[in-house]
Figure 1 (cartoon, helix red, strand yellow):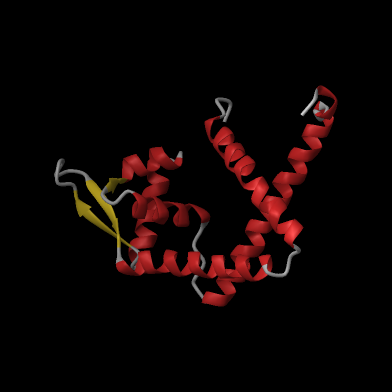
Figure 2 (spheres, rainbow, N blue to C red):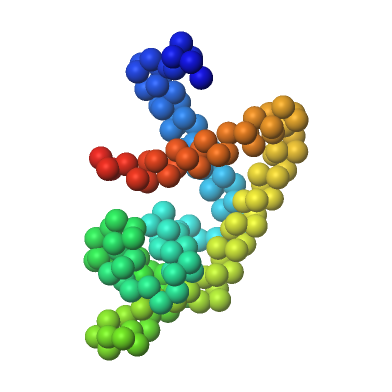
Length: 159
């Protein structure tokens, strides 16, 4: 890319808005479609993130989960209670600190996320099959850039 190809600050701002809007719309549409296919009771975004985190890090404490998700501890405790009530999480006494608790996903919690991921992948695969080879190639080529952008946003010191 040459200096002449670099978008102006106004162009970058417009692209940023368009990209954010498109990705949010895609996420919302996929979430609605998958939810309607699976007939699941909706989970709040924070609940889904918490369940994913506990599956990725079994035995994580509520405090560590709150820190990882950048949420207040009492907020995560509320989400934990809801997920326990739904049968997706178990809270156990910490083996290292008897006063603390650790979280583990139940089989139902793991199954819910697996079914969600499977249905989402099927939805994307169906729709990718309807695109032209050039459009699919463009999406494939954009994936590394989208991953890098995701990492950069996650690492942004101002965030």
